[in-house]
Image 1: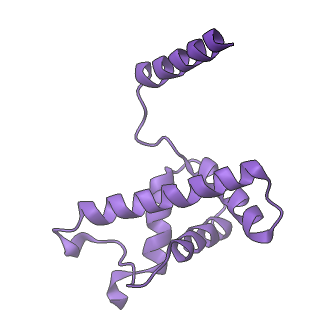
Image 2: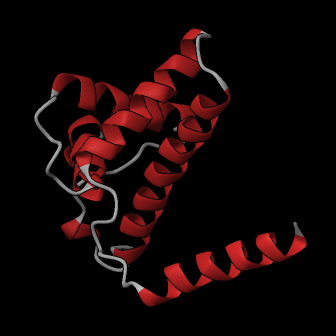
Length: 128
């Protein structure tokens, strides 16, 4: 059993290191699927896997949010969204969830583009 676990671990490491990851690893379809599990958890009907995908959804959104805002920190004139002070993880996640619900044709967009569009619509910098 230990040999098979070691072989599996080596195989996974090789798989991850051999194949390059595209910048658009998560697309709109995947993000929408995770959003469905996010909603299942919120409604109390989620199972164990729902909780995993719920976390993926939220962590992905926060990663895009933070990477985007950090990359533009020096140039505020180029910002597409301005998240208000006091906005929570739950608040940002709800924004992206609702955006996906209102825009179902985004399956071929990159996940990061979907998140940025959702945040730009909800938190325009002109309101700041």
